[in-house]
Amino acid sequence: MRARIGSLLGLFLGLAACQTEEQPVADVFRPDYKGVETRLLEGDLVNFLVSMTGARDRRDVLDYAQCAAAQYALIRGFGFARQVRTNVMEEGGLWRGDAVYTVSAGVPRGLRTIDAEVAVDDCRAKGIPTV
Image (cartoon, rainbow, N blue to C red):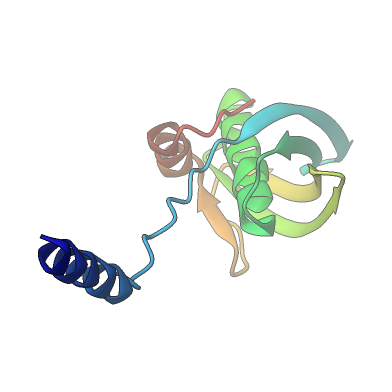
């Protein structure tokens, strides 16, 4: 009987030693969008100040600012926006974005142009609030 218990114990220990594969860690993204402050700077230039917690990195803040700019463009009767610049900072888990966009009726010149209607639809699909 002891021999049988000993061999079973050895079998369990051997199997336990084989279980070295780590379980994947689920990356749960739970952003808390704190709001957007909008300031008309001059002409077609608009400043968006966004804040959020739970961001994975600066890309989440950039996306939030872009969603705000796209919705703003639609509200004002424009179809397009173009990113001029965005500064992102994080302190104590609070992420802030200070973004400047131009809004226009036609496709603006530049590389970072946004079709506002398409962008707003994409934001809704991703669960990112707009203005």
